Length: 132
Image 1 (cartoon, rainbow, N blue to C red):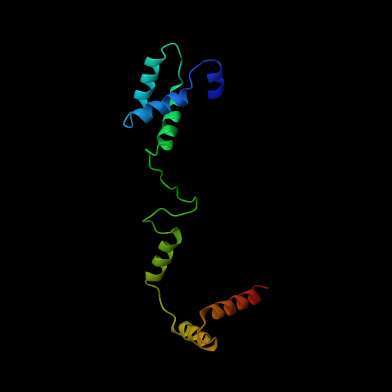
Image 2: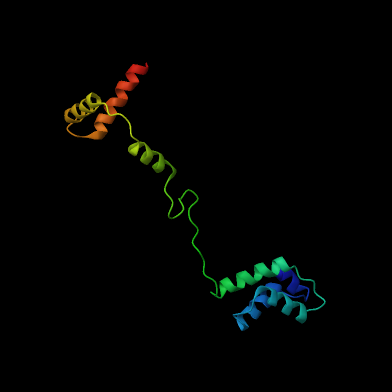
């Protein structure tokens, strides 16, 4: 688009904005648009396009800091994952303890040499056999 305007003898808005920002680092977006309208009174400027060109010029000159975006599935800092609250509540809720069930679980762990993953796998297999 800028090349077409330059070929017709028109104004290359992005280049003009870049030059304005380069000459005055502290200039604001609306000030850039008013400066362009004063410099070229017969040209009609799209203010949204001017703001985009202004942001791009500041970025090229290194006047802005880029904030790294968080991945889409990442949790917000300082927040617990959703499942952790439910497990914490379940662990602290006052339920009756079945001693014989705990002793059976202890015996299963002893039989599996203390490996909880192997014990859990064995329980899953037993549950699958009971379902079928």
